[in-house]
Length: 165
Image (tube, rainbow, N blue to C red; front, side, top):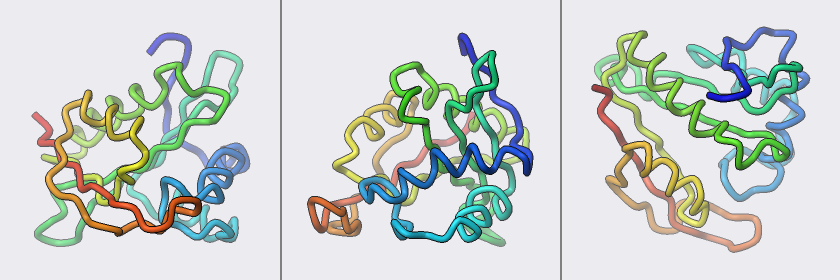
């Protein structure tokens, strides 16, 4: 992770997180959340309710990305975690998403998770699919037409999985 650090998010980080989360939700091509999601609902989803939330910052404190980590299921499925990652538009191509994914896997293992599952990776988001595969995730299923893409209509979504060694 050259040139930036990943640390636990604090409540004071939310306005900067919202500034990068909101445009991604609004774009409608990678996350299933409503494009007009209220800020308080997004804060609850991204910062307040996950088990953990993190931010990636460069040396001058510019927010480069954020991710959250949670159990994918309750009870007998709570050993598998789920994460969501968003990189700031201006920070794309700098390795932020890769670093956050690697960081999340280490954090997940430290928290006792044995695997990580992404429930809805939009198939047309080829950059994300390729990155997750490069980082060891496998497509274990494809859900036909499971995502309503704002521009393309119904598109497939993948379930991706990795055992955490």
